[in-house]
Length: 171
Ligand SMILES: NC(=O)C1=CN([C@@H]2O[C@H](COP(=O)(O)OP(=O)(O)OC[C@H]3O[C@@H](n4cnc5c(N)ncnc54)[C@H](OP(=O)(O)O)[C@@H]3O)[C@@H](O)[C@H]2O)C=CC1
Ligand SMILES: O=C(O)C1=N[C@H](C(=O)O)C[C@H](O)C1
Image (cartoon, rainbow, N blue to C red; front, top):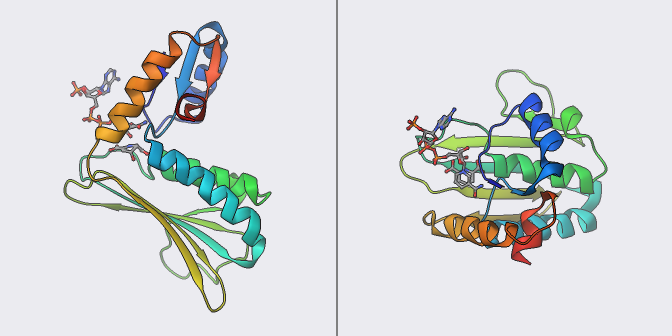
């Protein structure tokens, strides 16, 4: 089975994890090679910069998307939190509105933009004092996502039972 859908709640994810050991299964919020390379890149950068830089994730998608933030942005935030030894459920800040107070050192901001036919852009900002590093992936269309999903479907037919990461398929 290949699961590419995003927006699952905790209970639905728990069901996937409970059932996955019975069959070969690949699950990923983003099937493209580009995004999965970016996931590795942000891990590397976060490891080097550590707590010295503020980390924010920004995603932009088409106006038909129903879940927010994107599964990919959430995955990026999870990877960043894990790398920086933080708990996303404690440090994740989903948009800001009103007198929210100064930014805390460890929070990870996650922001969603919606409009037109955007195929999907993701940026991670590492903002320091005096400089910033921005890593961006821009989807021009959905082909890379579809290609990754087809590779996953072919790969999963010969895979052992259990839940596999898309990195096992692509790299
Ligand atoms: N992992 C990845 O690489 C990618 C993931 N996605 C994710 O895939 C999902 C779908 O996105 P997208 O294709 O744009 O959405 P669409 O709205 O275009 O398509 C959703 C489809 O799912 C069907 N559907 C909705 N609810 C159910 C249900 N309960 N049971 C069965 N079918 C259902 C809809 O049927 P109907 O029209 O009849 O309502 C529709 O055909 C999103 O979660 C998105 O984030 C998207 C692209 C890449
Ligand atoms: O809904 C979409 O279009 C996409 N959804 C996935 C997500 O939520 O991350 C993957 C990709 O960004 C396109």
